[in-house]
Amino acid sequence: MTDLKARRKQLVARLSELDERLHRIEDQLDEAPNPDWEENAIEQEDDEVLESLGASGLTEYKAIRAALARIKAGTYGDCSKCGEPIEEERLDVLPHTPLCSECATAAAG
Image (cartoon, rainbow, N blue to C red; front, side, top):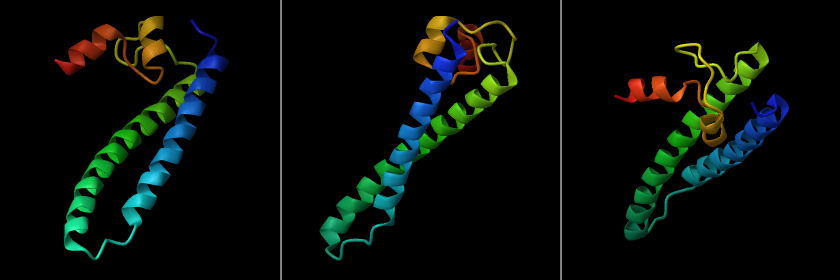
């Protein structure tokens, strides 16, 4: 398995990126609405996209925090459902995943 220090560093870096992105989204959503009704309508559509991106980012943020907690607890890399090791290739793509491929597939289906 990849060195846990390297994996932790990767997760912390991604957490920092997400934190910055979520703050930018929040700042944009807090901007005063445009008084021009046509521009306001466009901004409302943009806000919906930003809210969706924010929700997605928040979900990933929580998953990364949970992965960091698993590192601290010594359970990182073990599937939280079946207890088997999570495939290294899967952790390379989704370092915050709590599930092995088999359990993730079963959960999605």
